[in-house]
Each structure stands twice: as structure tokens, then as C-alpha cells.
Image (tube, rainbow, N blue to C red; front, side, top):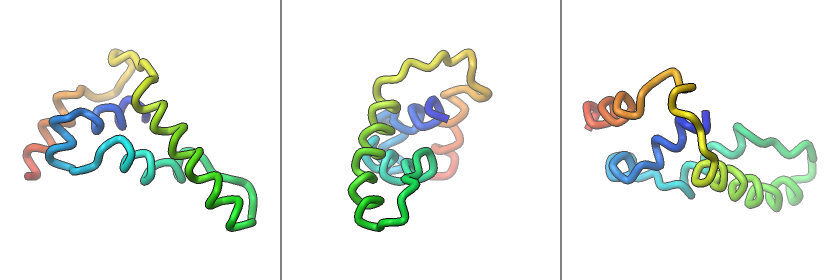
Length: 83
């Protein structure tokens, strides 16, 4: 999943989606990390750390492309077809 998000962080893809790494982390962090608290203040305060953690994974984690079920060019090609 991280490799998939890394493909969307490619500058060519960002031109079409207008979703940079910060935006990707903001949208996907709640799906990766969930604060177990029921206190809304705690949840809100933790969200910035969750986003930062996911942003770090997207920008820094080295994922072997051979382990992915799709190719980077396939993702870029599909995005260009839709525009």
C-alpha cells in the first residue's frame, strides 16, 4: 500500500491529481492509523502525528518494486487516460 501511495507522490502524477505527499498523508492516515481514544481532543491532536508518520513512510520507506502487484507505468498511464 505504501508503494502505491509512493507512485501517487510522483511529480508527473501530482500534476494530474493535485495531491501532493502532504495531501495524501492527510487523506490516508485515518485508514492506516486509528487513535483508540474516544476523546475528540486527543484524536484531533494525534492526527497531526499520524499524518507526519504516514508522510515519512511515503517519502522515506524503500519498497522493492518487484514485490508490487502492479507497475508504476500502469498507474501513471491510467491517470493520464482519465484526464
